[in-house]
Structure formats: structure tokens, C-alpha cells
Length: 73
Length: 450
Image 1 (cartoon, rainbow over the protein chains, first blue to last red):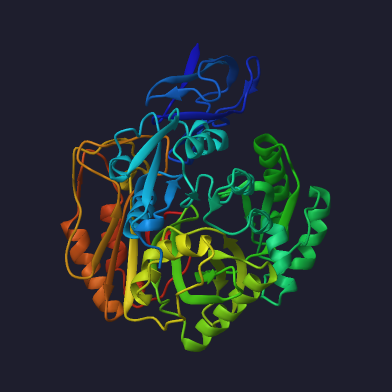
Image 2: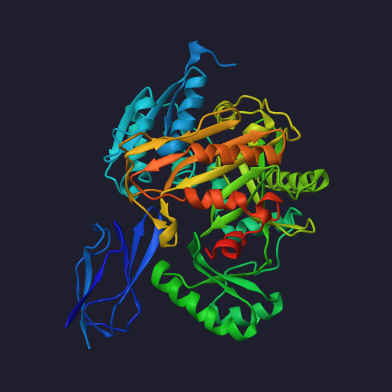
């Protein structure tokens, strides 16, 4: 089942720390959003494999937008 | 004094409250203030205040406010003669300062190479040590992670491991003892490699519960330099200051003079010009150690202005043009406190709280000064710093300044977004604050906020 990493607030994607196909663990930092000069880390909600980077570096996102899809183990 | 006949044109390469502050100083000299703005800031108060304005690009700061080409282009198009960078953005970018000078304009700040030398935190520390300014024990050059473990044992614990490429609290780890060392080095190395592409580190002894005390310095192009005493900025969260004051409740006249003289040694060592701030960590016994130098006007400069009766920004503009320093060393008159009102949600660990300010009421009254660029209906975007306003109070003593701050914050209302206002009021009520027992650990100790 695909889980989604969603933006916790509006901001700009600063760093994507994973690649499609990469295995990640529950709680692993997968993306860092920048909002008001602050880095907001986003973590994987599950153990799984990165399926798709929906919002890449520099993408502007609103709160709740999907950032990364992860296929749960 | 420069009169109307030689009215200068000053491009203010910034936004928000500091742009408004600089524009006011420019106009106070009878000169012409030119604002710049990104696509989301076209209708901002700093643009409305200015005598003219130029667009510099999209909302994201690296495409506008920190885009050297865009800002230079605006300066040329608008016939600017001086460029004032404010703080943040391009203010400590040596390449920008150099480009401004090469374009034949006057840079309001120190020489580009001085900005660069002080911007390299390791070099700055080495210069300070060589000039006889106290520094904490640490590495003198970047080290590879495998050397770090051995060097850490020599420096002693607790210590900080810092990534050379890091900053703003990223790529830093505090190590309490040897048991934590290897894991911490690995962690910082990993983060530094992922985020900055450079895994070189440096180490510095960590001072327990230090106070952050800084000295305002000013030097002209004729060899005259002074310090204007200290500011204490110990109350911080995420390495960002929240409450600042002058004088420091800790510093007595002899500590003030010792810190001032140390700061001036650094000024002399690099032939510093214009306004600058030398930041120290201090312990409660009055020992102090150089941390870094900020080669620009600082956010908290108003507390110094209030206790010394000066206009530091106007002085920056005059000194940049080669005029002699008009400031005199002045003992602090009364006490001033500044708080930073941030768009941050106190119920969500002070995470940013972007949105639209439907209505804002800022305080007015005796001994109250507010620096802001706000109005009803303004949008606080995620693109820039979360500071909404600086509220500053001044009184004959610290207790009076604190009472005035309570009054000022009591008048303050922000509707539409969450702010740290409730937290600011709580800080003022703490006995440790009222009695001046401050440390950079204050927010963690009292509110569990790092």
C-alpha cells in the first residue's frame, strides 16, 4: 500500500534525501522543507520503498500537499 | 553634514522592517531611498515608503533578494550611488560587496575581503586569537572525521562538533563525553556530506550555560574606531535571538571595558570599517570568549541606539561616504530591551505560522519604539524570515524597561496568524529574567524549547 509524506506547512522543498527505488525505514528523514528560513524535516511514515518524488527541489508546496509516495513493505 | 544639494541615491537591498529602517535613515538625511522587491512584495510597506522602487525577481530569495545580478541591475537602472544591504540576504556576501564597488557604487559596510575573512568562522577565530582576543580551545583548521576523535580528546569535553559548510544550527552536535564522541562525529559527517557536500569538521570546547554578549563597534576610513558597549542576547531559540537588551545585566564597567577593548583589537587586526558586532560567549564570572563577528548592522541595533542616543544606520551611510565618525564612546543611559515578534505557533513547538495578518495593532507610548513593515491584510509568506516586528522599550533602569515592555506587549494584537506573543509575555514574568539570570539555555530550561 502506498503511503504519502505530506507537507506539514507551506514552503519550498530544500533537499530530497532519497531516490525512487530506495528502501527507507519508518521515521527516516526523507525530505527537508524550507519555510521562513527554517528547515522542516519530513520523515517516512513507514518502512518501505520510495515510489515517487512528487515535489522535487525548489517546488513550492502548500500545507497537506503530497511530497513523496512510499510503497509500504 | 551633507545637505539637500548633494542628496544621494541609496538602494536598500532588503525587505521588511530593516528595509523600512534604512529607508527612514536615508530620508532623514534628505536623500533618495530606492527599494527593491520580489514578485510577492510589490505592495509591501517598505516599497510604499521608498522614493522609488525596482522589481528584482520571483518570490524565492535566491532568485531575488540574494540574486547578485538582479540587485546590481536594479542599482544601475535606478541610478543608485550607494547600496545598503541591511542584515541577512547579501549583507555578508563578499562577492556582492565587491560587485557593488566594481560597478562604481559605494558599499555601506566593511571592505569585501574583511567580510570574507570574518565570514570564514575558523579564520575569524584564528585572527582573533592572534590579536590577543580570548577564544575557546578548538581546532585551528578543518579536520577530517578520523582526526576529529583524537583531537577531541585533547580539547576536552563538553565540546561542539561543527561542519565547516554548516551554519544556522545545521550540522552541529554537542558531545558531553568521550562515549558519545565517535557516534556524534559520524552523525555530523553524514549530515555534512549529504547537505553540504563537504564532510570536513572543526571542534570547539563548549561553554556550559553561557551568556551571549556582543559589542557594537564602529570605525571610519580615517583610523578612528570606537565601541558602543554591549548587548546581551542570551535568550534564543534555534540559535535565533528572541530577547535582547543593553546594557547586559551581567556586565559591570570593567567587564564592559575589557570586552570593548578585545573587540577593538579585532577591529584593528583587520582594519575594519563601518558598523560591526563582535559576539562573545561569557560565563557568570566575567570570562568571555570570541564567537564570531557580524560585518553588518544587526537586528538588535535599536537597543544600543536607545541607550547611547545614536542613529547607527545614518552613521553607516555617512561613514561609507568617507565622512569622519561623529559617534563618541558613551556609557549606557538607562536600559533598553527588544523582543522579536515572530510568526510562530507556540502550541506547535514554535513552528513557522505563515498566513495573512487580518489586523495588527502595535504598541505606542512613552519609551516604546517599534520597528516593522506591517499593515492589515499583509501576507506572511513562507519565503522569508518569520519576524513580524521588533518591539523595543527604554527606561531609566531595567525594571522600568521591563514594565514598559509588559505594557507594550499588552497593547499588541495580531489577528489571522499565530505568533510568539504569549511566550514573550511569559518570558517577562520569569524570576530568572527579572533578576537578570540569563543564559543561552534559558528557553530550554524554562519552556523546553531548544
